[in-house]
Image 1 (cartoon, rainbow, N blue to C red):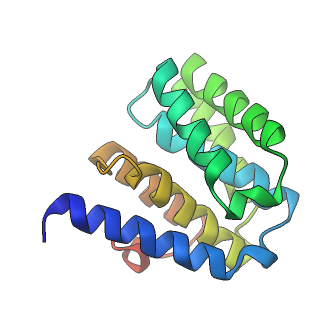
Image 2 (cartoon, one colour; image 1 turned 135 degrees about the vertical axis):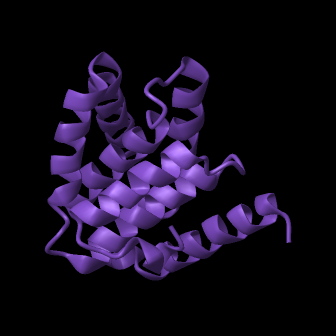
Length: 151
């Protein structure tokens, strides 16, 4: 199986798992952590151009699990985290990791945040090494073994 097919299959599998838990994923901490994760994956290489910002925003708006929240609210939060990361990646990363860390005591939400990162990272068929690395770092922050997600 080609790498593209494996990435696509993995993203689809993660999306399916998220859909099974959609009714449990309605808290503000999940919403914020998910948007922080999306921003972190988008900015993994240190920058986010307008096209990438729009692509991720479109993925967020079309994700059925995230439709538990108003789209404009998600967009605003995502853009705020991206702005922090692009202004000063290291400092912004500390902040978004703290936001993501709020789900640590809620295993279902924590795993869902990681799955959203994988779905966003793999949506273009290229879950590149920098994106994989930030998702692994999130796993460590949330005390979830990265191998659970084939990272």
